Amino acid sequence: MRLPLIGYVDGNRLEALERTAFLVFMRVVGIFLIFAGMRYWSSIVGYVGDESEALWMLSAPRQVVTVFYAVLLPVAGVGMWFGSSWGIGLLFISLVIQFVLEFGFTADFPSQWPTIIMHFLIIGTYAAFRILNRWQQ
Image (cartoon, rainbow, N blue to C red; front, side, top):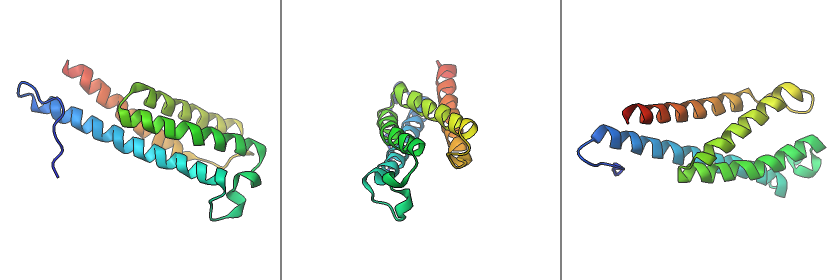
């Protein structure tokens, strides 16, 4: 299956390829965020493999964070899917919250370094696409 090159105008194939790659990146991240949010929703509704991960079995701080991410991540995923800047803004808010949880509430929350690194990679890739776009103009 060939992806159509978005913005292929006046023979500028490199710019069209960059736009298509950016759109594919945003959509893949969007799907990833929607499924990550669904993992939190599964805890809320009790559809988890281990009963200790169900919302009613979690401590109060973890319940708040679970509900927060159950709302934030799917909304950020939809924003990323549509290619809007508010999707990456919500992802950045998620990164800040992860930092606060990692360094401020170490007793209540397990270490989430893989999640923090993934946030940095996504935001860094987004920034690289935006810089490349500005550089081409």
